[in-house]
Length: 288
Image 1 (cartoon, rainbow, N blue to C red):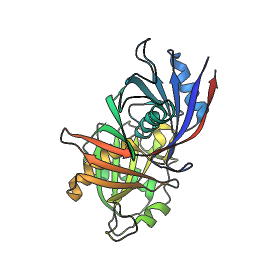
Image 2 (cartoon, rainbow, N blue to C red):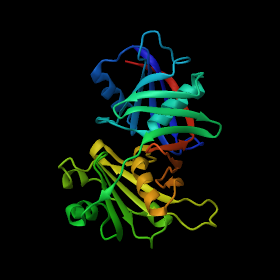
Image 3 (tube, helix red, strand yellow):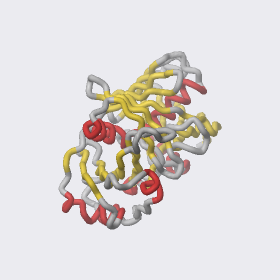
C-alpha cells in the first residue's frame, strides 16, 4: 500500500514555524487500525487523512471529502491546524479547482475557503462558562503554580479549560512561563478536561504588530504536551474574547516556541471564520 503524504506547517507563511501536520491522501479505504499506526509513526501533534467519499471523486475536481485527525495516541473530534494543512495541500499542491472545499468530519461539515492572503476555515464556535476555581484548583496549581489567575471558563462541548491569567502579565511572561504538563492526566482523570488553554489580553495598540489576545495550549491527555498553534482552541477563545473585548474581528497570536497567527471573524450564523497561512515543508510516499 502506497499513498502520498505531506507535512505542512499551518498558521504561518514560513517553514519550521506554526504547527506541523502530516496530511495523507487516501484513494482507497484504509484499515481502521492503520490510521493510528501511521499517526504514531509520524509523531506530530496531528496526522490528517483525506478520504474520497465516492469512487468517482478525484482530488483535483471534487469539492467534498472525508477528513479525520489522529494524534500519536488517539483520534480527535476536531483539529483546526490539520484542516488548514489539508486544504493547503489540496489547493496549492494538488491544484484543486474549487474555491471552497467541504470536509465531512466528526464535528460535522467544515468548509475551507481559498483567499489571496490565506485559507479561511469555517468552524464551530463554542461557548465557555464560568468555572468554580476550587473544582479545578489542583489542576491549575499543578500546571502553573502560584501564577495569578483572573478568570476561569470551561467549554463542555470541547472539554477545554480556559484559564485567563492576570492582566498584569504580558506576552513575554506567557511565552517564558514554565508549564508542568507531565502530571496533568493523573491530576485530572475524570474525563472532564482534555485540554488546557492559558490566555492573556493583548497589548495596547502602538506595538509593531498588535494582537487582541495571546494564548498557549496544552493537551497531554491526547499525548501532546504543548500544541504549537491550535485552531480548535480558538473556537473557544474566539467566543470568550469576543465577549470580553466587544469585538467580532480579532487578531490572535499563539505564543508557543514556534508561534502562529490567526485572524478571527465571528459570523452571524454563530460560527467562526479563522484565517491562516500554510507552508509545505515535505512531500513523499508512505509505504505500509
